[in-house]
Image (cartoon, rainbow, N blue to C red; front, top):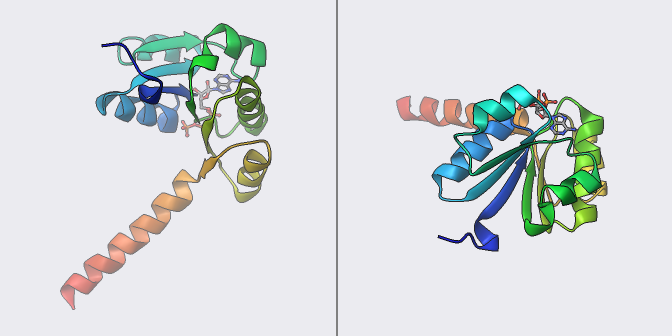
Length: 144
Ligand code: ATP
């Protein structure tokens, strides 16, 4: 069936985080475009996602060429390379992506991402650490 704008999601950076987001979105029925500059990763993901492209996502012109203007939602999974992460979010805002989710590896990184236009900032380690603490606490209550 033809994808609607709502079912399209671009995932940029197919590392552990981005890869998991892309795989889960695919399983949930979304059309996913995976983007990574690493050729090997792109090959690995090619038969698991709807489309996969090898590209430098920090370049606004490149984003236009790979059809990012068709996407209303994008997830940026680039983390440790803060410069690439920030420039990618900036480029996505410039091509007009309306809903940008971006992973941050520190609070300051998250603040920068927000200031350049990310709508949702995710802190995977902090969030998961907090969840684990809650899980441990609730399990302890089970024994009281
Ligand atoms: P994770 O913990 O999710 O594995 P990470 O925090 O270590 O990721 P990085 O390794 O910096 O994050 O980036 C994740 C992915 O993003 C990598 O596969 C990398 O090739 C890709 N990436 C980095 N810079 C760019 C870029 N400019 N354009 C496209 N992809 C990029």
